[in-house]
Image (cartoon, rainbow, N blue to C red; front, side, top):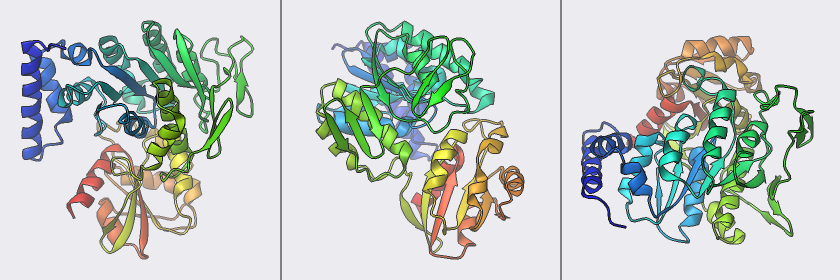
Length: 406
């Protein structure tokens, strides 16, 4: 592929901007690099995506983990461009492509609000739809509007295969607009945003994993099904045996494996690759902090918290750090949809910039707690060897950076 001079200059500008940002401690350079490249060449995204096999991954939760899993698998086929830092808007997507301009494969997580802009430029071979639930209502809007936008995007991609979690009615509704689908029964523990049919508005009727509406909208038969720790497809059942904890990570692995097999990787090879992953962008890793062994987890919205709370050790102190910056969403009403009542019986500390909002919610949940705005100081004040530290997006990034610097 011959890259136009303007695009080559855009790539050079992106690398310079990213390096400058890292040198002066302003960030990892993913966003600013892409922003500079788009200014220098507005068509850089489509040009850098040309002649590659591109996979886009979107959904409310699990994008970064699924992208990492799939990239590890596809590395068996060749070099892979990946926005590993989670920069999932067009700037970050472009930066990932510019960083690896010769990689024949690209696995890119994309914010739900920007799938249209990115997909129209890159025309992906696969679009992976994980799940849809409420997230940052002040920025994302109502989840049904997101479903309609994704449905419209999918209808404009006749050459794209959509790999979709058919246990989520909203995802299924969007994916049905595709010419080709790979259905995965990856599970769905959060049903609050899919109580009504996306097509007619009537109630979704559930029977175990099956669901249907009286209008005829119903769960498709999956090619792949997650059954506990086993991933099954007609004729075989393979144990996942992941190092990453929890049902949500098993669901992410199921989606990654199904996509990889569609792209030509044997299922056994795909599963072997995901088994090697023990941490994702700093999540789940343990690090020493102020004399404690701290495990850092990320939870950003009610559906994510519902998956994260069962992972916490029932006897270990918990620090919860919550911010409300632009990247988190300013609206804090989501706190009232999280079942914090499950934290009763262990030491809990409310931390972060919105510690007092969290403290009010914990009070109503009848969870005894203390308040310490600085998460690291909160850890230091606790007794015991181990601490669980759960944070939303910007709080997580701040704590992860401080833990890395210690």
